[in-house]
Amino acid sequence: MTIDRRSFADKTTLARELAEAVADRIRSAIETRGTAAIAVSGGSTPAKFFQALGKTKDIDWARVVVTLVDERWVDETNDRSNALLVNEKLLQGPAAVARFFPLYSGGEEPSDDAVAKTNRLLGDLPKPFAAVVLGMGNDGHTASFFPGGDTLDAALSEAGPALAIHAPGAGEARITLTLPRLLETDSLFLHIEGDEKAQTLDRALADGPVADMPVRAVLRSGAPISVYWCP
Image (cartoon, rainbow, N blue to C red; front, side, top):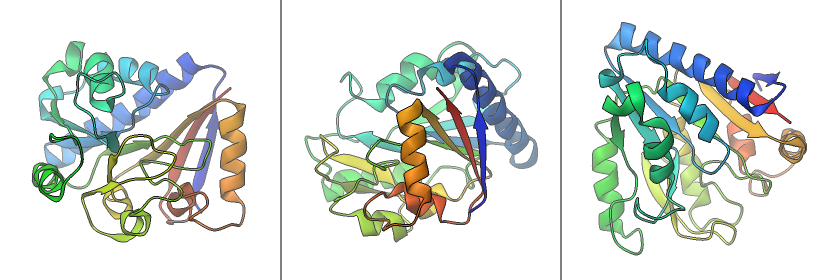
């Protein structure tokens, strides 16, 4: 494991520092490849980070593509939609001109045709990602790699770029980028907050089956990971 654990005094400081790190990767990718793609996570944790990143003015946002690490299979008007959070918190101000590639592509369930439609869109993403920002649940899931997921093995091994997954702890059906696609990145970040998440990470770093805490697949991938944590 190559893990750089960084601790910050509070959420505002963490958000600012993580935004600066991701912005640096975006600028570098634009300079070397002409475009930059990032994949970000949803939930409540990244809101401050999104706001800080979206206000960054010295990025050529017209050359940036934003997509999600994973998504609940709900449309963008649903308050549980990760796309809604990205649109409201990140794609504002200077970042409003960035392109956004959503994962939800219609219907009540992620049918084979719907997932294929999403994957056609994701096929146009620049490679590699400039940055991937993951979160983590207290059950040890990251992205939508949930314990007990019906396609967990495939999600951790197949090229993807994305597939559907159902799991007892996931609530709605989900769509997630696969681990091999997420690892195609210049930089990989894990953003967690609170003492409980720190304890969960410590458990994940200990010996144990990947199936019990799927974040272990990321931690054991060999890819360098920067962990950003605050109380």
